[in-house]
Length: 392
Image 1 (cartoon, rainbow, N blue to C red):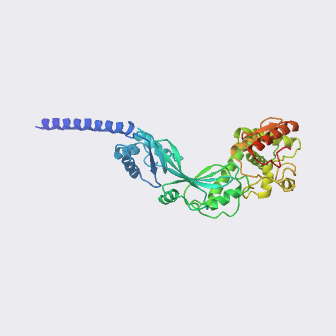
Image 2: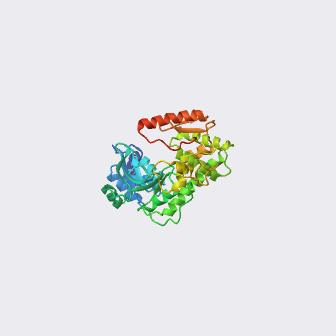
C-alpha cells in the first residue's frame, strides 16, 4: 500500500514538475515572443504610476497578452521600479521585454500630445501637436499667438485634460528681452523674472518643461547650457581668431547669426568680419545698427534710414571701430562654431544674391557688381532699394 502511495505521489510530483516547466516555458515565450499589437500605439506613463497600473493599461490597449506575466517579467529582470514618466510609442509586435525596455529607458517622450511654445525673432507662438501613430509623425492640431484673441478650443481642451508634454523652444537669433517677455506671457509657467539675462547668454534650443515650472529656473537652465557650449567651443577654437575673451567671440557669433540663416554660409560670413578686423576696416553690418536703435526690444519692422546709418551709437558698426560692446542676440551653436573657426578666405564683402544666400567678394569692384546684380533682382521683385549694404 505504501509503495502504491509513494508511486502515486512520485507520479503526481513528476506531473506537477512537467506542468510547471511547461507553464514556465509558456510564460517565457509570452514574455519574449512577438506581442499582439498589430499597429503602433502610444502609451502614457503618468508620474507615480505603479507597475500594476501600467501593466493593466498595456493589457487594455492590447499591447501585452497578460498583465501578470508582464509584472512577473519586470520583477525577474529587476526593472519593476524603473518606470519613467512620459509618452512612449510601442511598435507593432513588440514583445513584453521590448516594451519594458522602452518604458524604463527614459529620455524624451516619443509620442502623445505636446505644446511647443516657440519663441521666434518676430513673434512667440504656441503650437499644439499630436502624434499620429499610424503615420509615424506629429500632426499640427492648433497654432496661435498668446495674447492675440482667444486660444483655439482644441488647445483649451487639451490643457484642461493635462495629458500633455510642454516644451519651450528658442529660435536662433532671439534677444534676451524677447525671451523674457515671451516667458512672462507663458501662462503654463509661474514665478517672477527679476531681470533680463545678459545678451547672448541663453542657448537657442528646445527645453522640455512641466506645467507650473518656474520661469527663472528655466532661464537659468538656458544660461547654463549656453555657458557649457561656449566653454566647449572656446577650447577648440582656431589659433588665430582675433578674440581676447569668449565674450568677444559671442559678440561675433551673434553678428554671424543675424546676417545669415544658412548654416553652410556661416563660416564664410565669419571670415568676412574676421578679415575686416585684421585689416582695420569697420564691420558695417546692419543688424548691429538695428540693435542700437531697438536695444533688442522687438524688431525694427522697416528698412534703415540713411540718418540712422550715420547716427552714432555703441552698436553702429558703420561709425565705430571693431566689435560692438555686447552680443546683439543669442547665437546658436553653429554660429558660435563659425565665429571661433571661420573659413580661410580673402573675402571682405558680401551681399544677398537672390537665392536666400549671399555673394561674397574680395575686392570692392567685385562687390559693387554683386550689389548691382542684387539691386536688379530687387527691382524685378518690386522691393524698395536698400539704404545700406554691408561693405559699401
